[in-house]
Structure formats: structure tokens, C-alpha cells
Amino acid sequence: MIYLLLSIICSAGLVVMFKYLGLKGIEIFPTIVVNYWTATFCAFVFLPDKSAVYAGAIWGEPWVLLALGLGVLFILVFNLTGTATLHFGVSTASVAYKLGLVFPVLFALFWYGESVSTLKMVGIFFAFVAVILSSIKKDKGKVIEKNWIFLPLLVFIGSGTCDSLTQYANKKYLMDTGIEEFTLLLFVAATVTGTVLYIFRIWKGGVKVDSRNMTLGIVLGIMNYFSFLFLLKALAQLSWGSSVIFPLNNLLIVAASTLAGVAVFKEKLSWVNIAGLLFAFASIAAIIWSNV
Image (cartoon, rainbow, N blue to C red):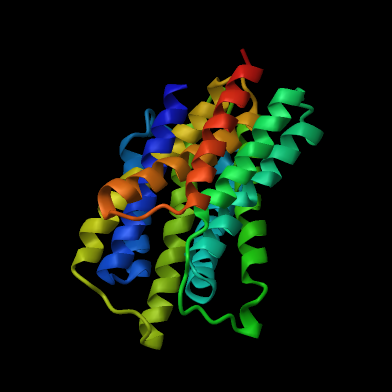
């Protein structure tokens, strides 16, 4: 349970940092690239046994292509989410991203055959409702262009695919060992992809570098590394099943970041957002009680 809570705290911290970047008008993409370099550095530093890296044996692991592919997908989905936010507003992009949890939930229930009870299904349904209601904000001045209408769907599919592949990697390869090594290669792939995209955007003249990108990127990278590492450890150690862990993880991230927005940025909650938080508490109670 402690790993899940730590992952949620780190992930909520990421959301708060992104809100800060938006409020200060800081270019996000350079910060993201620094974030992935930092996460890769953390993954190497905290690797318990570095001998496999030094000897090159890590490239012979059965999950190596999965880790590299997932790393590339992570940063591509992030960029899709950022573009969707630009064209549709925060609420639409946020809901599309977070509702990707439907993929690993269905995967767990129908592919891995995790147990289903009425109370558990009620809790999962409440989680979906809570995520939607908590994420809805008024986005003024957003004009939806016809050419971008498919973006929320791509964000939804991409987010769900990332979660499902993380779930698959956990169940197939990482229940006992390899979590730290898998995390390292994932962030290496994301770093290389992000750096190539960054160089391309510099060449195109579409990126402005701010001195704050470095500092904030380092902070983001540390939280990013630990949020993913702790999620993998939670999936490996908790007996609740991923059909419970993914809804709880996404739900509590939304709730924690919403409350942090109120406390730190003095955001106002609408009655819809408050209803979402109430559904969140009801969902948590139902899911936990179904596993007692």
C-alpha cells in the first residue's frame, strides 16, 4: 500500500508542477526533455546492481523491446496530450487521458480473469464518474478546429495503451525482479526520443529556452522516476489486482491534484468538481471494502 501512496503523491506533484509551468508561461517541452534526462539519471543511480548494464547483459532481457517501445510511447502520448490541451482545453484533454484507465481495467477483468464482485464494479464505475467530474473545468476561448477533432480519441487510446503495456510488463516479467532495469531502459528510450524531437524543433525554430526549464525539469524528473517505479512495485506487491490499482491510482491522483490546486493556486471548485470528489471517496470506500 505504501508504494501506491508514494506513486500517487509523486504523480500529483507532477500535475501541480505542470500547472505552475502553465501559470508562469514557461515552455513545457524543453522542461520535459530535461525531466527525462533526470529520470534516466535517477534510474541509473538507484539501480541496485549495475553489472548487467556495464556488461551489456541488460540488452538480452526478454522485456527489452517492450521497455524501449513503452518509453517512446510515453513521450509521444505526452505530446499528444499537450496538443489536445492547446486545442480543446485542459478539461477535455485531462478526461481523455485519465479515462485511458478503462483499458487496463478491462484487460485485467477479461484477459487475466481477476475477480469481479458487485461492490468492486460499483467502485470502478464511481471511479470513472469521479475522474470525469473532477476534471471538468471551464476552458474559455478554446476554438475546436476540424483538423484536430481526433486528438482526444488518440490521447484516450494512447494513455490506455501505456497503462495496459505497463500492466502486461508487470504480470509477464516484473513480478519478482527487473523492475529497476525495466524502468531505466524505458526512460532511456523516452530521453532519446525527446532529445531528437527537441533538436528537430530547435531546427524548425519552434522552441524558446528558459533558464527555469533546467531547474523545473530536474524536479519533474525526480518525481516522474519515482511515480513510475512505485507504481510498478505496487502492481507487483499488492494482491488487489490491477483492475483495482489503476482506478485507485488515477482517482487519487485527480483528487490530490484537485485539492492541491485549491490549496496552492487558490483554484475555485464548482459543484461538479465537488460532486466528483464525493464520488471519489465513495469509490475508494467501495473498492477497499470489496477487498476486505
